[in-house]
Length: 81
Image: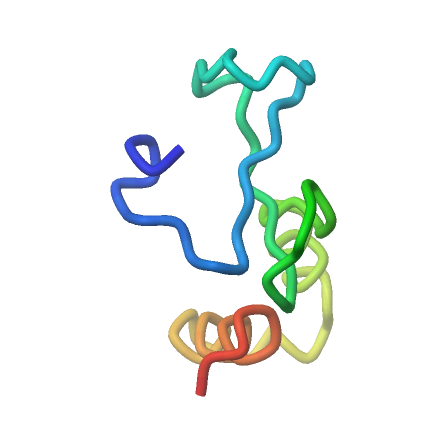
């Protein structure tokens, strides 16, 4: 997943194998999941694409620029300041 993303995974990110086979690391079988805290076990969390889709549906985001949306996402979901 790190190769696909081009970066190291964050401590709050986990890779989910959609078919349940942990050594099947084909990109089309991997999903990136995110949690608010570092989980002790897999998977626990939500798909990043689902979180982004949900956030983008919120009417208060309609007037925000992309940088502000990204900063808010990082604050809420990744605990960054």
